[in-house]
Structure formats: structure tokens, C-alpha cells
Length: 193
Image (cartoon, rainbow, N blue to C red; front, side):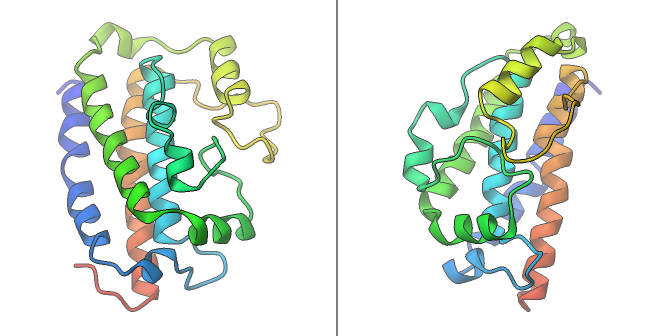
């Protein structure tokens, strides 16, 4: 099975059922943080969408992010460009409270649709290529994909082939956070299966 076929299979299986479940949650449940160190479902959906958007569009396909094509930051009431890693608890709470939930759902759907478009343009040879360090530094740090307040040290993340990044940004990263969101729901007493 090719990386593109693997991506297509997993990208289209669990997440739509999970998203349909999240659509049954009330706004206050989406915004809630049932424990101080637990992210809200809204924050998790935003984070997954930001990582997939930035990762697949900028690091796999070298395309413009969905975020930049539809004033999504403004629509969601979220002015930051980074994908949330390293946010403080207060920042997570504030984002969870202020995000426009219908716009978040629309952005999340637009990112997922774009990812499926992008994979149709990729060749197996492209998926074997890594990004060079100059490009990674420019995209991650200069374009603001990584949180500038977080101490990244000297390391430059995402030094892997584009095929590995494709599977990470669109599948494994999302699956991990979907299960985290289910845990948040469980802590709120909301059954999800």
C-alpha cells in the first residue's frame, strides 16, 4: 500500500465519525476544560486543523495554507498563526472561550477537504524527499507555524520525508488528539461510543 493510499484510508475512517460525535456536543461542552491541565474539545479541534493545514500545505506540498485563503483567523476570532504547541493553560482557556464554533467547524472541514485535494497532486518521488533546513526554518519560524513563545531550543522539528510528514500531520497526530478529546468527554461524563 502506498503512503497516499494509507493516508486516504485512515484520513477518511475514524475522524468523520468523531467529528459527527463532536457535533452533538453543546457549545459549553466543546469549550469546557474538566481538569486544569486538560484541553477543551474546541481547542483540540482547532489544534488538529492548524497542524494539518500548516503541515500538509506548507511542509508536504509547499502550498498556501487554508488559514490564509479565507480570513479564517478573523472568522474564528483567533488572531494567532501558530498551531498551539506550548500554549499556557490560560491561553488554552482563552482560546476555548473566544473561538467561534461554527467557523471552527467550517475551517476544520475546509482543511480536511484540502488535504484530500493535495494528496492527488503528489507523486511517490515527492514523498521520499525531505525539506531542506533553510525551508523548514523559514516556514516554521519566520511564517509563524511554531509558537514563538515556546522554547524550541536549537532543534528544527519535522526533519523527515514528506511521506512521513503526510502520515503524521493528517493521520497519526489527529488520531492521538481524537482519543484525547474522547477522554475529555469521558471526564465530563459524556459517553462517546
